Image (tube, rainbow, N blue to C red; front, side, top):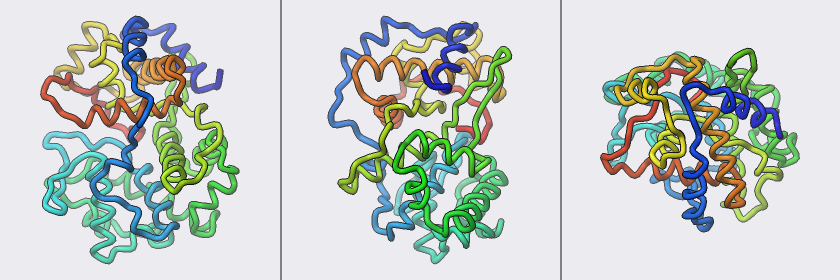
Length: 313
């Protein structure tokens, strides 16, 4: 058992507010369709495939860097190509809009010193995007690291990792401090690394969409422990919350990042997805894809997702 799963299993075994219903995991697995499993890159409305290879790769790193905390009242929303977009797809549209407006946002050297005013223009919408200052610091960080250590090429990360998913995950966490995502729970450090996991997932998909072999050891990468995946697991009855936690989430009351309940939700997500993946014999990220994509299909019957203001997810 890898350290990520070992630590999250410890949380699940000692959790007070979150429980995994194994019977519901069995029911979900029995209805799971292995193929075809869609990915956001195959469904998103503003494909990034029209750019040079080095730009496409930097786009994946940039989007993974910013893949956190879009919610709010009102929710940050942009208008692009005649559509109103929020969340991750709004993030993608911001990158495309910036390129169309002549802002070289897929140039690592430019990003290493991008101005505050320029980035505010990139994210312009109905309200300021949450945690703007953190996003500014992060784009400068990844721009500087890619420029200085990797000769401006994200592809060099793949070469250094020998196209191995587990090695790539370790490199991202080592070389980009803003990607580190751990919490303490009852004296144990718990490893989540959601955005780093998301980047590895995207690199695997990017290679597959080019007709190449994906990353090796991809099945060793845990699920993305964000807020939409546990929302869907709860919807399926797989994650069960205590009455107090359920009321907090349903009333959209923010939970402090690192609080025991928040750690239990994220750990339960990773363990539950791993159990499903083992049952249906796919990678945990394949299960994450199915759950996240289902979260984008609003029916009006969904219970809210938990809210924690953090750069982790």
